[in-house]
Length: 242
Image (cartoon, rainbow, N blue to C red; front, side, top):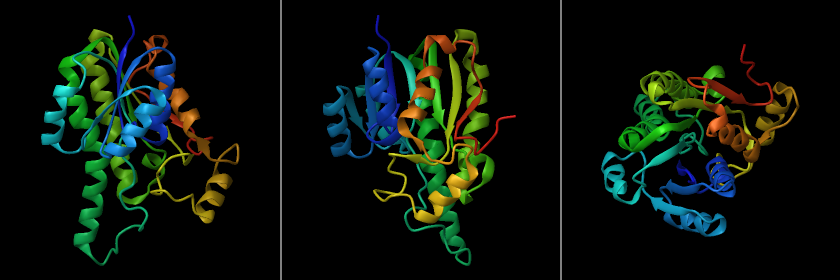
């Protein structure tokens, strides 16, 4: 029997790459996201089902449940991103702007995953897999974005212990800067940022969405049954997990 997977943020970047990989191995995949047109294009291109909604909006998540699968074997929370981009961090002399920046990143990266996961908990099958998207910035810092990505890690560990008796695993994959995403809202990596990454990574380059998706695919597989509560970095050594 094929598995049923839900991939939030599945219209572009890492989420799309994960959805394509799961589909290729025979899973039935549902992708979600806020942009209906982007989801529709991806769904047609890779042969998945699209359910558009804002994962950070409780009311929208509640309504979307009617269109989401009754059983979920794999849940990938890939929705999110640095909401400070492309404009950059807030003016620190404007405390209201600082507050809005931090709350925006928290909503996009933490609440989106928490709300969808919580809503789908009753539908998770035994031996299901949960993979949440973190970031190398959770260990190195990048304003509100890095701080809220760090929040994903202990919450995922809590899920691992809460659900472990049913054979359900929960892990975090934390990419470094990655080619092929919409991180800069349609723009390429700034030259200075690219040079910094190349100087800090062991292999001297950015990662690719397919490399991150490969790690997620493994954690979502039956083979990863005894790997839970972990943070796996796919960053070319920008963070050394030791």
